[in-house]
Image (tube, rainbow, N blue to C red; front, side, top):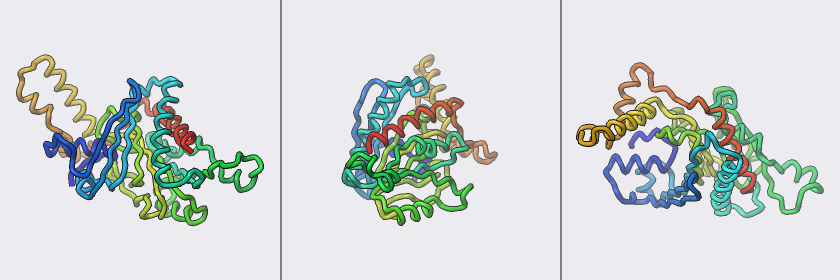
Length: 311
């Protein structure tokens, strides 16, 4: 299978189409786009059969990508609009799998001490949990309030326990009807770092985007539906170099439009060649932007509000 090295279904589809010179839809994959406003765009990708599953290496299901421009300088109203967009898409996925009263467990994956990987635990701190109130102080809770609980289980390197093992124990005891998992992702585009949210109803494989694959967290392993919310926070050096090369070639093309070699070079994906050149000396690092602290804070607000409003 093609080495996608990205967690985003829309990117995998685009890479597969480019590698195989496919102009139309891939068999087994349906997609549509919607512009919310000038800064927010939604793309919905549905994998409908095994052909689509094999093509891009993602399970059959629904994948929603929300692209948010200018998040580095986003103001309060822009963050609120992004969270409302996330709420609307998340509600659709939740309603497919459980009723309005079904209990939900929210799980924040990642390491809170490593900034690019801290999104999940930081979102957990902002979730409106209600399970304890409903159980112990029901007189103070509005009738019809959904039970919500949350956990940040840490990472294997600090706990010594696979995340799915921890979640199995929690699920067996509190018996939620659905899990929402938040995690940082890897992308094949520098433009998507902390400016894209992917929602899917197929669960997640932690660490897959950076080659550090852990046990799957999905309905098969936990016995209940799992909705994953992921945001790219890192890229590989090879991705950075490839994107930079494209930008450089585009600049040269503007100045020398008739150069056939540059035109050909621009059209091909040089990621694999660049990666092969970097790997022998271990130069293919995982890279994150210098503004990652501010970006994580903004994305934390978008995701936490989106989840709270949806539930």
